[in-house]
Image (cartoon, rainbow, N blue to C red; front, side, top):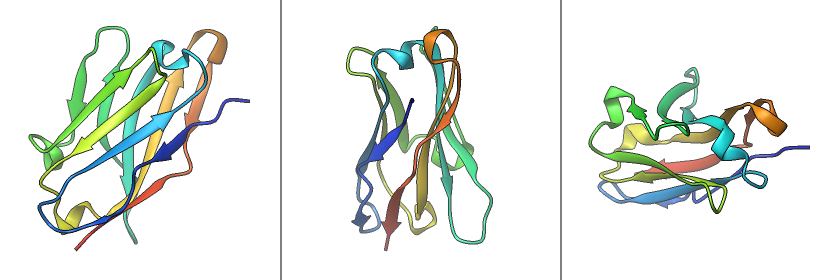
Length: 118
């Protein structure tokens, strides 16, 4: 049974930084398209950033470009989201997502980690 587990959420002041982590099982992330999503109260879940494990290509939502960085450590089976210059609008639950092939074929979501900016 594959699980994604996020960590790193916290309460920070405007302008602060946080680094979120997402761990999976073994080397599964090397076979997955990965992404960070967020959902704030009363809003739909939205894509924040994505990472293509095949070529390392990254994409970002316009509202985080230049402030957030997605990265992956395949050896440790961990996905990261470095968040800088945080704004109150970044307050949300952040979710890790994986769409995988190979032995871990399937789509997965983590349980979310809360980021509060004030």
